[in-house]
Length: 120
Image (cartoon, rainbow, N blue to C red):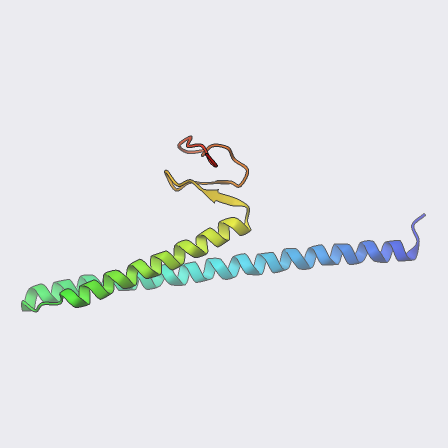
């Protein structure tokens, strides 16, 4: 028969596991929310870029510098989102195929979509 101390230790271990799972869930949710925010900002920048090009075409104004700034901003935002996705994949023990972009289990030897070998 288990002693009170053994039961208490098991309860503590269980509580620690639940606490860690909760912490992991919060971290994953935080990363997903930030990625969504970045994607929204990219979409808004694309819209603004389209409006800028349209207005420039109508007025004959040279907006090359502003277009370059928008393109640079989009590239930076997408790099930020990609970095967050990589962190998310690592956190969830996943890997992204360099050839096709499919997400696979961390221990996969080959991509489940295109067959490219991992770790070679």
